[in-house]
Length: 193
Image 1 (tube, rainbow, N blue to C red):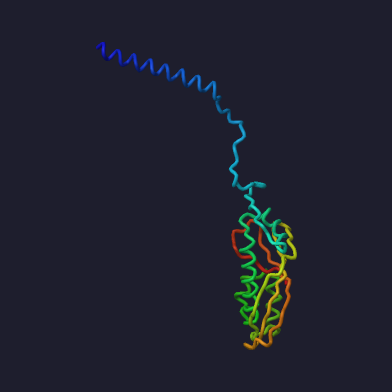
Image 2 (cartoon, helix red, strand yellow; image 1 turned 180 degrees about the horizontal axis):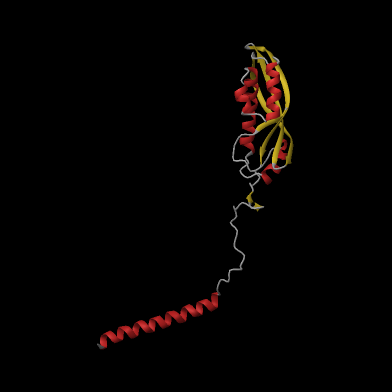
C-alpha cells in the first residue's frame, strides 16, 4: 500500500501548489467586481431611449435633411426610401390616370385618397399620359410630429401623351410621404401633394 499512499501524497502536493498559484494570480491580476466599464465594440450602434439608431452614411448635399430621420428612425435607409418614392410616384400617377382606386388606396393616406377619388370621379385624370423620366431633385423638408415622420420631396418628371414623345412636358411636384417612427412596413404613404 506504500505505492498507493505516495500517489495520494503527490496529488495533495500538486493540489496545494495549484491552490497557491491561483491565490497569487488572483492577487496580482485582481478580480472582477462587476462595476467596471464594459468595453464597447467599435461598430456598435448607439442607442437613444432604448431604440437602436442608424449610423448616418455619407449624404449628398440635396439629401442632408435626411440625417434627422436616421437619428430617430430604426432601420431607415435613404437609398431605399428614395427609390421607393420614385416607384410610388409612378405607381400613384399611373393608378390615378387608369382610374385604379384600389391600388391608390394602398399608397395614400385617407385624406389624400379622398381628394384623388374625387378627381377621378370628376374626370380630371388622363389615361393617355406616360412617363418619360423621373428624378427626385431634392429633399425639401423633414417634419416629425406625434411619432410620424413626414418627408417632402421635390420630384421632377417628364411625361408624354398618346405615345408621342414630341408632346413631352416637364412637371415639378412637391410630395410628402409619411410613416410612423416605429413602423415595420417598408411602405411610406403619400400624405400631401
